Image (cartoon, rainbow, N blue to C red; front, side, top):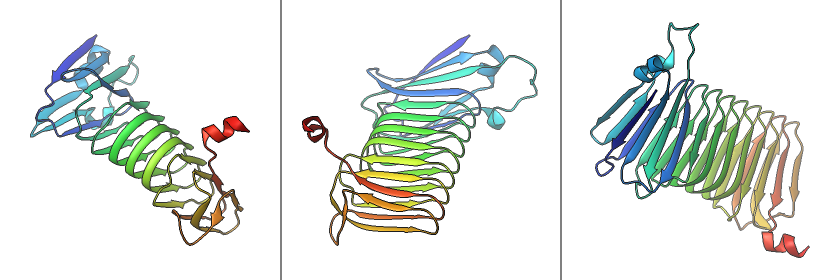
Length: 252
């Protein structure tokens, strides 16, 4: 079965989605209204709660999708097509389901999973927060004033990010971050995961601290001017590398 519902975005200021094991996909498209497409077993579709009130559209699995139907077949996929000219707030999360988002533009975005994978591409926002507990986090082509990354044990990969401020926190997962424009400030903290940061500058105000991990810079000179980069770890390795422009790579 499937449900296909449409919502006028003229008065819609915020979208809140909270799911458990269902797969969630959000995309920007050339549509006039927000389109919510739900596919799954009849029972699971009926469990999904959808409400719109005071400019907020909410999509929820009750009790985080927990059910007494343990031995029955269960599957649910939620797809959201958002008009390209909508610029509101968006909060979306799953517990174990895969969460994918692509091509969205708005004011404040937050995406989170617990054990599910989080994959986002081509996002533009004033503030962007990406969080997992143990799920992997993969992101690319991001633009934001402030980007916040947080994970406990999931690995994090960010490519082609243009941000003014970056704050990243990791406990035991590995983190690889690529910035394609010089930021104003970067703050990174970790416990045992290895952290790699690539920045498009050869001078930065760098402060790296570790208890037992290795510290390394490659192609980036520590100076009083330039982006401020502060990174700390207990047992993980920290590396700050200069990003070579694509044109320069082609000439080599």
